[in-house]
Image (cartoon, rainbow, N blue to C red; front, side):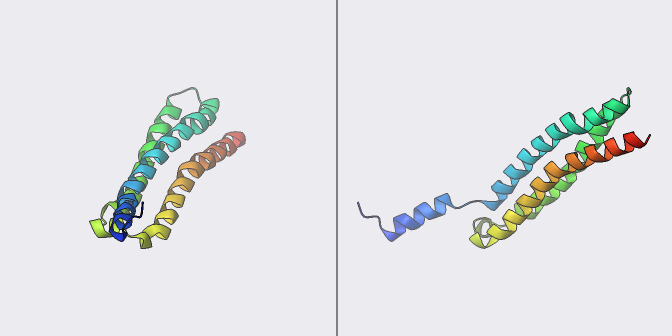
Length: 123
């Protein structure tokens, strides 16, 4: 079966990536990963040095603090119009923002854990 140019173009348009939805998905999943890492890494490090509610308060502050940053990443992409949302010229910028978002989501809990352990070892 030979497909017409219109048919091929229609398939390409339906498979095009919506940058707005893609970034929204990255933000949602990165927040889940960030929160899980915070719970299992940073809070464990904090609780080793404190028997109070401070580690849990720190979790709330650290998770609450990352939400505006993630929202900033998402806002940059949500404001695209329908034409821009499927424009392949945005692919490099999307990959850069997604990489920065994931580096922050994974790197920040690790960095904070190392920092907390260093501070606890001093005291």
